[in-house]
Amino acid sequence: MSIDVSIAAPPARIRGLSQAAGAMFLVGTLAGVSGVIQDYPVYGGQALRYLLAAAVLLAVTRLAGLRAVRLTAREGALLAALSLFGLVIFNVCVIEATRRGGPALVGTVLGTVPLALALLGGRPSPRVLGAATVVVAGATLATGLGSGDLPGLMWSLGALFCELCFSLLAIPLLPKLGAVRVSAYSAALAVPLLVVTGLLLDGTAMLRVPTLPEALGLGYQAVIVTTVAFFLWYDALSRIGAATAGLFAGLIPVGAIATGAVLGLGTPSAPDLLGAALVVAGIVIGLSAAGPPATATAAGSPAAGGRQPAAGAGSPAAPASSPATGASGRRSP
Image (cartoon, rainbow, N blue to C red; front, side, top):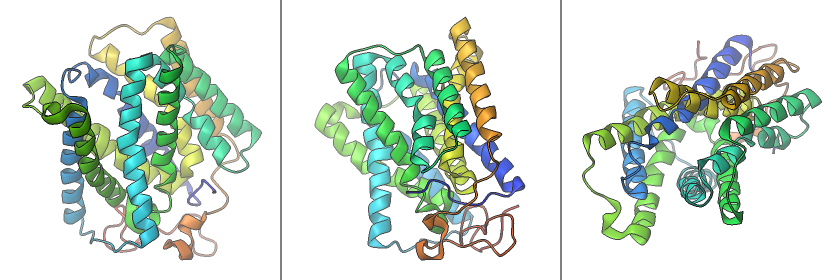
């Protein structure tokens, strides 16, 4: 499967790069609030997080005039798989990996996302592969080089697989649904799945009234890390493709370091700063390679419900009813 979704013209490419960077940095800030909600039942808390995020995103679709879209059986299956693997099982894997191996191990394994997406891109150039490797090295160094046992490693690899599903399963859906609806529908589907998981593992103890700090922490996860970051990431995928966007996954530990420093949770160490510098260097190398993608994937083809760019046009036609354009098919600014 090809990774790139569109032929990005400079304005769309700049917007996509900024959104990818912002999304991954916001995901990294999650570490700053994890201590606030660590005593709240995990699965119940995640169900509340996605319930609030889905409510906000569905309200945005209504305000933007985005109508409900009839999905084919294949598209429905893709959306269900995206929610199951990219959201629910991902959370389970991260939770279990952290319990068995600590956050450093799962963070290090997830730091290989840029390299994995580059390899899945079909025929990545040597420079892109080199850039992804530098990003992975920086993320690994900043995360702490990992630790833990074999079960922890296996759960971490499961989290890596689900993280890739979060992007790759969304690509065929973005031309038809747009970033807002993909985010809203996947978050809404995750709620009952997390509720069932919580009931099986924790019973009725999966939910309780949160304290004020816990409520603020869950609200931050729902609004910033889910609602905002999901939209930024999915909109970036449709503009620059997953191979390029994946380079910015290395900003997750950078976001965690910055958040910890701002909240007074610890001063960055020399390995932290060196790892962050390597991540930035790798991203710069990757973005200087060859320029924008040269071909559109099937996800952007007429057969997949997308649009082909007009002859001679430098930017892709925005998908009909995309969040960037509202209910019409106008190009985004």
